[in-house]
Each structure stands twice: as C-alpha cells, then as structure tokens.
Image 1 (cartoon, protein in one colour):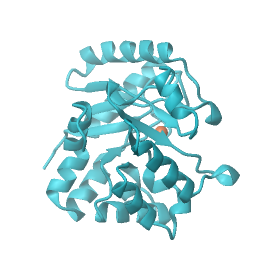
Image 2: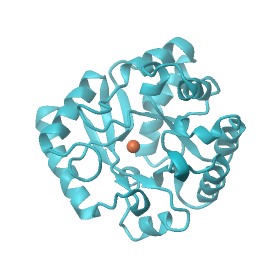
Image 3: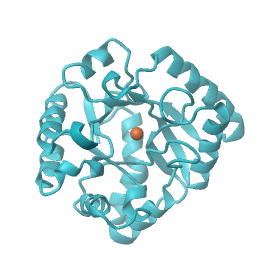
Image 4: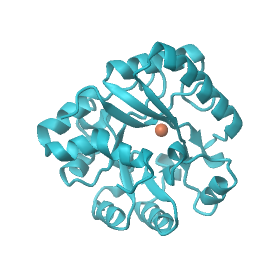
Length: 249
Ligand SMILES: [Fe+2]
C-alpha cells in the first residue's frame, strides 16, 4: 500500500501560462497543498490548444517550470517535478504541434495527455473522442485521455472506454471525482471506470489554491477501500514510474 507517495500526472501548477495559478506564490502554495495531500511526484500540465484559448509559448513554460522547480528544491526537497502539458486534441494539428516543439509531451517521453471539448454546444462526441484517440494510438505517441470520467457523451456508451483501452489508449481520472464529488453521473462513471480497472493514471487537475485545489487523499482512500491493492498501487504510483522511464504501462 502506498502512503504519502502519490503521483499526480495532471496539475496546472505553473503560474501565468493558463487558467491555473497566476503568481509564483500561488504556484508554491499549490505545492504545499499537494504535499499535504500526500503527493510526492507531479507532472505539471499547462493547457495547450489554440482552439480552447491557450497557446503559451513553450520557452515561457520551460522557464516558469525551472523557476518553480528551483524554489521547490529548497522548500519541498522530497517533491519530484516534471514538465508536460494538457493538449487540446485537434485531430489534424496536435501531432504537428508536438513535432514542431510548440506542444510538450509528458516528462520528455512519448506519452501525451490529451483533452477534448466537453461543455455545451462544443461538446465532442464519445465516438469522435474514441476514433481520434485510437488513431493516435497507432502512431509512435502513447495517448492518455485526460479526465476520462468527465465526458458526458459516454453516458450509455461506456463500452467505448473498453474499446479505447483495448486499442492502446490510456485513461486518466481526477481523484476528486471518486469521493469528494456529490453523487452524480460523473462520480458514478469514475467509480465504474476503476471498478472495471480501465484507469491507468490518477491526477488532481488542480488549478489554483482557491479554485480546484489539489485533492488526492479521499480518492486514494476510496480506491484502497474498493479495489484490489496491487491495482491501486499501480494507479497511484507504479504506472507513473513506468511512464517516467518511457516504458509502456
Ligand atoms: Fe486540466
């Protein structure tokens, strides 16, 4: 059983690059809150996607990361930080952006964290998400679907999650939605995904100290209460070690 050794592969930690923290102080506060949640490894994942209003310059992201990492090495030496991004999955553009170095993969590996539009009229269908992700899984890239539990069009189509996983796509869920969230379809769906062992990675998708702060403990407690211990160990820690080593989970 992992205790206070959790990994967070989805965190808006870097200030002033997206809708995450806006000051260095708030980035450091996010680290303090993450540590209190038992998190010891974080992949910082700022949004990147011209279509959803975020196109921070890769050089600015790298310099912000260095700045936060340097301060963290003193204030939180037990914390390991890596750089990645949460990429909007524009089917015809996302791989080109990676090849051009505008968009960043996860910790310099072939893993990429991809998100789709999920609100209102611009919501993308489960079928579109599935076919786009499966196409990417046939390339050299290793696609991870960000907050897989949240796409409401999968309602009544949960079989497509199995199709995704069978096709080599990895799923990430937000820990918050397992236990902290009030009972609704998203919470039920998150629990269904872990019950069927379809999830590979867990994250907080934390944004700011006062808006979606890092939340990990309640989700991990739920997992150890309801799922096989070895599966939870992999989900909260082991799979990310494989990712960081560039190995396939
Ligand atoms: Fe996110």
